[in-house]
Length: 230
Image (cartoon, rainbow, N blue to C red; front, side, top):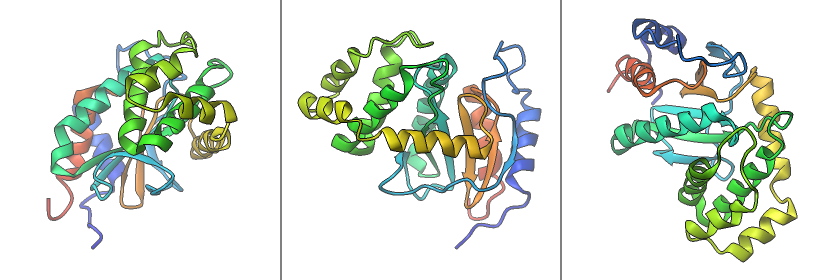
């Protein structure tokens, strides 16, 4: 049964962020870091077989991140999101969906890295996909600094069949999927990375920039606290 909310989540989340004074004040984030806050229409819900998800597919709150593997702010936010899932994951109330938004104009290697993550997911599902994402962030200096020769090294480290991985990556099998994800983010209004949505049911709100852990907790708790049956 669809949950009923005391207030629209855009209002609830904005109130939580303001109360926590967490609009990244003093964080030194540039204008390209995120696309602003507010309610978003037309956001795509979790799509099994297309999206990779960490956590309960039926979670009350889904954090949808459009990300660039060479973005330094995305690297920081990846650590935050792993903390979020560690905290909420066992409750089944929060899940993380990772989608690609490679900014090729400044990070020419990012689209291929995104394809590599898809190749990892093809072999090992959600677990391998997110392990590969973590593996890239562990070794990349960001800002287009990763040596692409490290991609099969990461694949091997997380237990994938490297030959199959390389065949997949070299074929360009997932180039169109990565490009479609990029286009999807643009249509939603994304102007930089990470571009993050909190989705509850069919309603979504943007969180600006690479929100820190306390900010994410405040926003998520504000939503969970206003849903019925929580």
